[in-house]
Structure formats: C-alpha cells, structure tokens
Length: 88
Image 1 (cartoon, rainbow, N blue to C red):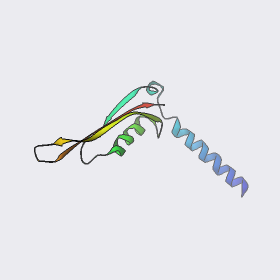
Image 2: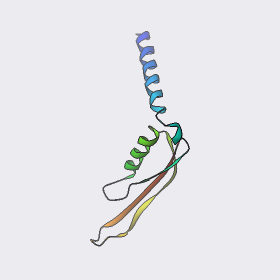
Image 3: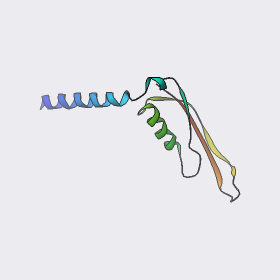
Image 4: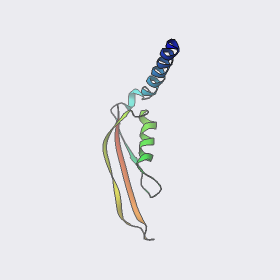
C-alpha cells in the first residue's frame, strides 16, 4: 500500500511538472493582450487564452480592464474586456 502511494505521488509530481514547462523561452517576460469583449464572453475566455499562450496558470496578470461601455444601435450594452499578462 505504501509503495503504491509513493509511486502515485511521484507520477503526479512528474505530470504536474510537465504542465509548468509549456512556456516557450521566447515568451517568458513578454506581454500579451487578450480581448474578451462581447456579451457572450467573460474573463474566463481571456484566462483560457493566457493559459494556452503561457501554460496552465503560468502567467502574471499585469492589468485587467473592462465593463459596460454604452449601448449599440440596437440598445444592447457593449461589454469591453482586456486582459494583459506576462508569461512566467
């Protein structure tokens, strides 16, 4: 039982370490800006884009701006969202 537990912990540690190293060396420290505007989008859409660029949870949020900005010609409120990150 103890050996299987240690083996499983080792496998999990190895697997999670692989996720942390998905960043290309050329992306480290670079700023990336993601636009997640629109009613059908949210901050999670920006986060997914940052995860794809930098690796899972391997980025630092530089700025997060957004909110309702007026109405379009149909009377629908316009949602503007911008996320700026740097890869670790």
